[in-house]
Image (cartoon, rainbow, N blue to C red; front, side, top):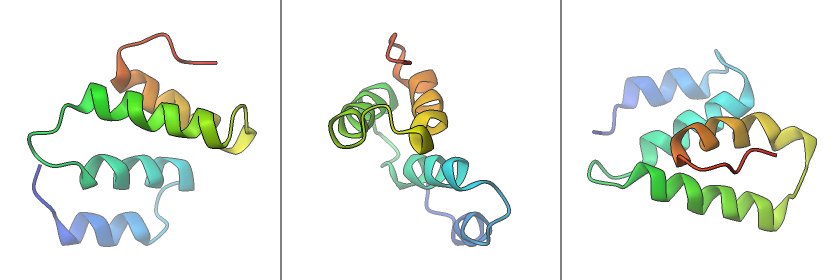
Amino acid sequence: MAYDATRMKLLRAGSIPAQQRAFMEWLLSLPGDADVEYAARCQLAEIDRRLPNHPEVQYLRLLLSAFSSSETMQ
């Protein structure tokens, strides 16, 4: 997935909710040959380590869980 400055500009413009924007920025930041499932599992582990059960990251966890192909939704 190539870096697209226009997409990133739109994402930062606030046209979508913060958690969706964070997810999109995370996804777009991955290298083109990244293992998205593995990257999502790593990101979920980081969220769980730093902010377990924090209400503001639950939707972000849901989005990442969809890509992680695991039963990590809380």
